[in-house]
Length: 120
Length: 144
Image 1 (cartoon, rainbow over the protein chains, first blue to last red):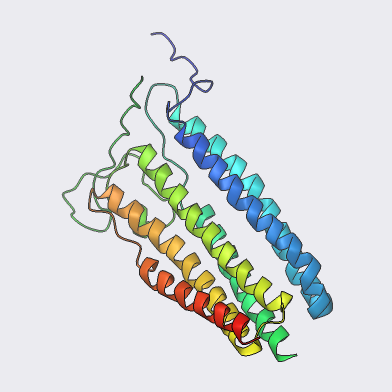
Image 2 (cartoon, rainbow over the protein chains, first blue to last red):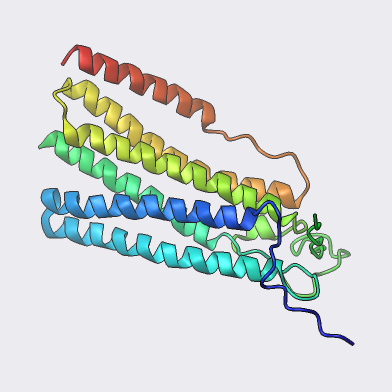
C-alpha cells in the first residue's frame, strides 16, 4: 500500500481562507498590542505602580496572543492538509475566549480610567 | 479547482439519544455548548465565523480607544457631554466584546446543526448608541 503523500506544502483552499483568517488574527492581535503599549504609557501616569502592573500584564498578554495566533494557524493548516484526505478537527474556542476576555478587560480598565480622569 | 475533502461526521449527542452512535474519538473541545452536538461544518464556514468574531473584537477595541481618547485629550469640549460620550463609547466596547464571543459560539453551533445563522443581537442597539454619541459630541463642540 502506497504511503499517502505529505500534503503540508499544499493549499487547502484556493480562496486562501485559512491564510486570510490567520491575517485577521494577526491584525487583531496587533491592534491589541498597540493599545496595550499606549496603555503602558498612559496608565502609570495616572495610577503609578498599579498602572504599570496592569498595563504590563496587558502588554504581555497581547504579545503572547501573537504567538498563540501563529500556532493556531499552523495547527489549522496541518489538520486541513492532513495525509489521507481526512480533515482533522479545527482548533476550538479557547483562543477566541481568551481574546474576548482580554478585550473585555481592556474595556473595563478603560472605563475605570475615564471615570478616574473625570473625577480628578 | 480542488474541492476540500468533506470532514468526517461526528455522530450523536453525548448528552442525548442513547441510540445515537458515539464518535470514535470523543470531541472534548471547548466550549461544550458548541462542540457537544452536530457535525463538523465545512472548515471554510468556521474560518469565516472566526473572521467575523475578530471583526467584532476590533470594533470593540476601536470603541474603547475612542472613549479613552475623548476623555484623555479633553479638547476643550463641554465636560459632562464629553464624559457621557466617552462612557457610552466604552460601554459599547464592553457590549461589542460580549457580542463577539456570543456571536461566535451561536454561529458555530448553528453551523454544526445546519440551522439558520443567528443575527447579531447588538447591531441595532450599537447603531443607536453611536448615534447618541455623535449627537453628544456635536453638542459638546457647540457648547464648549
